[in-house]
Length: 335
Image (tube, rainbow, N blue to C red; front, side, top):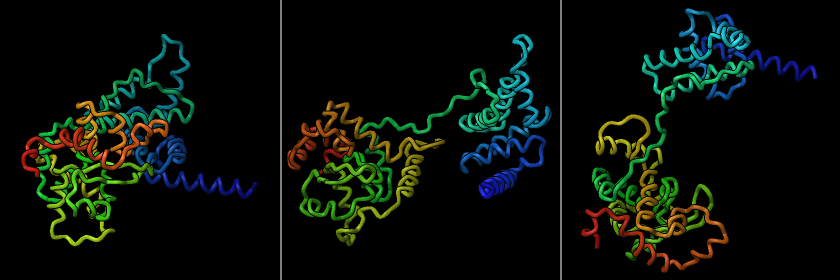
């Protein structure tokens, strides 16, 4: 028992020393902040420490962070006609102060939330209902593609590998991780025989789900152009590139294609996977077929309805999917 107490005491001293590295240790009431930060996960701790450091700066004319907590706690127990709504007034001012200094809406919300969380840790509830926080910007807006736009986007790519990647995602519905996991052995037989649509018989990397999907004539054509004059073995990755590099190239192309934008890339590889679903859904393709081609898990009792041979699936894809997944400007150029 004594040993456990000793270790707990040492851990607490270490945690306090660590968080004082954030510049909060020399202020009145900062031991309260240090204790709060010490119980957070490392990533959250650094973000909240940054927010509380700014709040300390904003509130410095009125006192310390400890003084703010005392004031909020005192205000809670006043008769309603004597309440000063200290928390709401202060956090409204803090949010406006952050926005005036150019902080992004999401950052403002997180930093105000850090103050709320600190108070909650000491059983001092603060409601943000009447705090005028900026609207959070969407974190992952996807561009609403048309087939013609996809063709223009791919044409804007200078490197054959990325043109092939983009076309393959659109025509197969594969995720970027599953596409980059392809080896030459996965495509060799039908590619070298010239069979299209080219069947991909795969197990999804993320979930272990077995499924098949296809590459249409357009993406096969671009794949052949990319692989021309390359020496490939069965175990050689078709695309020897990282997902991070692909995302960076898509972002670079998006800036050229659509102009400057901030935040996440609406023209990401995943947006083309989403377009696969959208284009087929818009043309009334059976939702079960779409789910299966995308590698999503389908309940066993329903899988019986999609129990088809490879050649039957190929014919279904050729007739019902490929026409809607081929940009119009390329339809007359593929033999």
